[in-house]
Length: 404
Image (cartoon, rainbow, N blue to C red; front, side):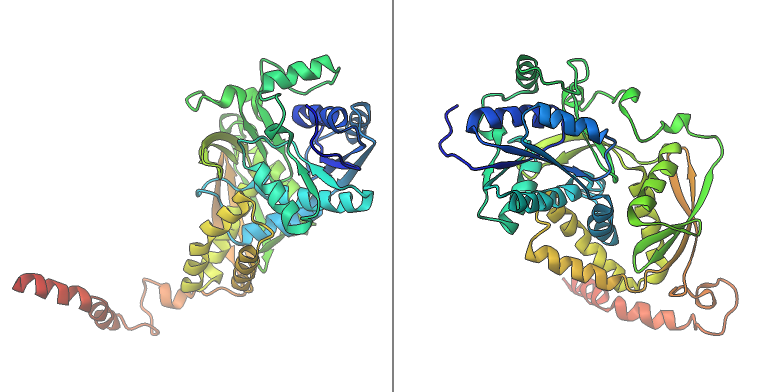
């Protein structure tokens, strides 16, 4: 390929996997300019010294690695969980939440390094290209964007692997297990390759963060999570930073077979895609948070917030984290969380996470009103008028049908 434009320097969002390893070499060969490999540590299990060595060996002028774990959980994961956001009711947005943070930091690196272009390894069929590029355009529209998957002829995993072999680039996938994965502190996802047949069950050996429910302990694990204004702050009374807290929940959930998901989702670009996810800590966190809200949120506030959760999840999934509508939604959601403080006790057992207790100084639950025993605060006779008033419009329609 002959480039139609030249660049002074390119910053690539680099992971060291198949796609970005090939892209790093391809960018150098195609544009004949320095390429900075930017790596975001959002909690994936990597040997960072080896990642740096590989980036330099593959042609990077420089490898920049940033530890973003605390920022990721504090400023992206926790806000989404305050909204109880789950795309299509199931997917807890692990990849979707990481992309805007990675792209934002990539823009910062580009400014620091004097680069005039940024690049990513997202394919032209997926959602990540949208998430990366919407962030670039929202934060630094002056930067050129290079999306190799949309312009080169290496249009399959097989061709990528052949290119890698030709150029001596080691890759972490094989022809036997050609699925791709994305890992961070919130989840690990698997897609492509052997998973493209939605009828085929994932192999047990694929999973990394969790044991199977069948292999989980035969005795339940009980834990307590403390919340302050919608955010978890402690496990079993021990206060932890956001990243350490989520990591601890991942360990607890994974050991008990919690958080696996196999779904076919609707991508923003229009096609359906099968994804397999492990989100052990996030699954526990969402269940606990929702349970605490049951006693701390007013009914109408809860229902209104829930009516916004689907739109919130779609905005995150589709890449609009840095949009005015997202800011408005987040402010609205956060206003509902002022009273969501307290403790939830959970039972973890063979893939299940069950709330078994909740308490809060902000609780709206009143035993004196809810009791089935005799009380002096509620007149059951009042319910008759309440029902008749709510049925008035139904009664009028019935009378009209009868006359007709």
